[in-house]
Length: 296
Image (cartoon, rainbow, N blue to C red):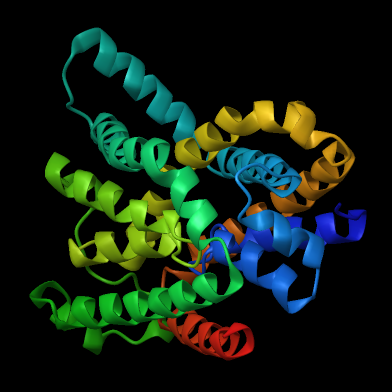
């Protein structure tokens, strides 16, 4: 089925690529193909398989790593949610951010429940993932172009990245409910293997005027409940017959994914204070293009 070595490699890959804007699902499909792990390749697009059960543990571990990293912020947001329920009003920045996360979670939750299984079985194949990874690169590059063209950031050209100054942009808590819904809807594109959840979420935020740091922060906060809920929803697969023979590997892979995810978010939070998405766009275009040639 899957060896412990494969579990560690895929776990590390999941932890990094779930947060880097380069698609964890796309890479979990492409890497086994590149390494000729044919048993895993054959299991990827099956309606039910041990590999999908294995990935459940990695997603839960990634979400838990995000919860730990942003633990102070989540404590504030949970308190804000309790206040919203009690008072039925949204007044403070934390309460507004909480409400935006709730609104942005709804579209991908509904669409995911309706279409995730169908899209996965149809498109979770190396060639399809390679094509969508290339498209992901175009989305990142196009989003950055739109961002640079917007009137809000004309002053960005005068700021040198090495100064460490934060780029101008809207504050996260100034987004309205409609804009949060649009960002949440954009996130649904990540149901296609190769399209990055964090990438499309960040691009949607940038187009609405957020700076890279706040767009990344909103992406990570928004991803946490979605990844965790999806993992918990699928846990019966891991605990049932599909998990037979892979639970030990799932535990090892989950530990690797948690460590990698924590390191990835720590790096990216600092990276996006002064940098943008273009390096990831280039990577996706190159890796996607080479993979198309390889699997065509």
